[in-house]
Amino acid sequence: MEHIAALLLIIGCSDDLAQCSELPPPVAVYETVEECEGDLQPSISLFTTKHPQVFGQCVEVDPAIEEEDAKLVWDVKPDGTLYAMIEVPEIMIASRPESREKDYLSQE
Image (cartoon, rainbow, N blue to C red):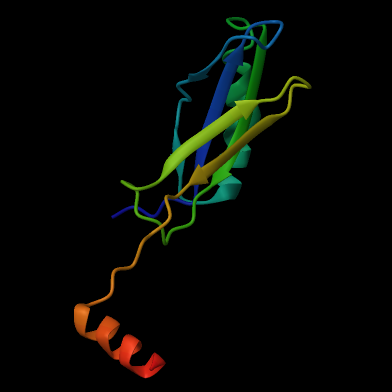
């Protein structure tokens, strides 16, 4: 299985940044952040004639997270700053009934 260290996110926006959408980069996933950063500017350049505003970012991926649980979230701020991160839902840990009973008895 391939280790993913970074995702290349390219966003195209209108002049006033009111409408933005993800654009398909030539390569979306990278094994190192450095490889992603090396492709960042050339990938952004591919879209500059098609969209008035184009933003890009290499988003670091923690190898410990499960891919199916992670979600890429992004936002372009009014000042033109691209904010992006991998969001992982909180994990709830359930205890076994016997451990809860033991905890309850130790409180008495």
